[in-house]
View 1: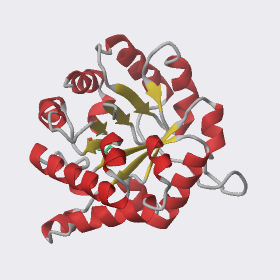
View 2: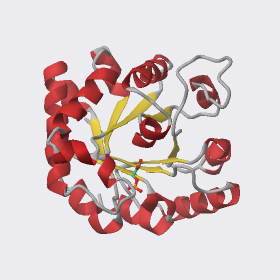
View 3: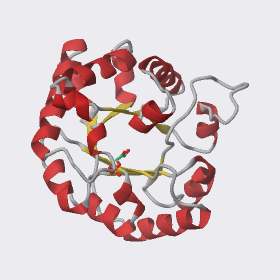
Length: 249
Ligand code: 13P
């Protein structure tokens, strides 16, 4: 059975004090939910976040990692470093990493392989740009992003994969994919995985939607049968908004 997940991607926001305040508020206000709740603060605040949430069900995850085991990669963070501070889930392939830091499908395939070899869970992000949707290439783009980074994996690896479909045109723009657009793409993703692997793998992978999810639209989006939760940016930085989105399940 696939799990329901609501994850907050804090991106490059919140200093140490702000991180502590937000985490305490979230832990105190967390509603009863069947969803797994995750937050991804910045690297410098991960250790503190893990400590602050020790007695909470909220899981701390990382926004990125490098594919190499260790070595001369100035500014980078390895899988072992994350595992060492009790973080075993990592976001990979976010469109901001692809657009601003040159992360290609090839690099992402290496990162995914490293994380899975370390028994980490990967939250793999992908999604088309506005031009792709306007030219009706969105399905093709999504299919190739999945194929290039994930479809060489053994079927058994998929138990540690979470997918996050984030159409680039909906990220931080206030423009959300309609619930119908999200459902259409999520169903297409499951069909593509069924063709590459089998229906069992496709049915059991959690597929999150990301892109301007807010308290006002979360319920409609999460209500769609192939949407298993959300990856939330801006609204995850405000405790009441994030809590309201979690409550939308
Ligand atoms: P927003 O919710 O701010 O649009 O960001 C979505 C996102 O990029 C989450 O990873």
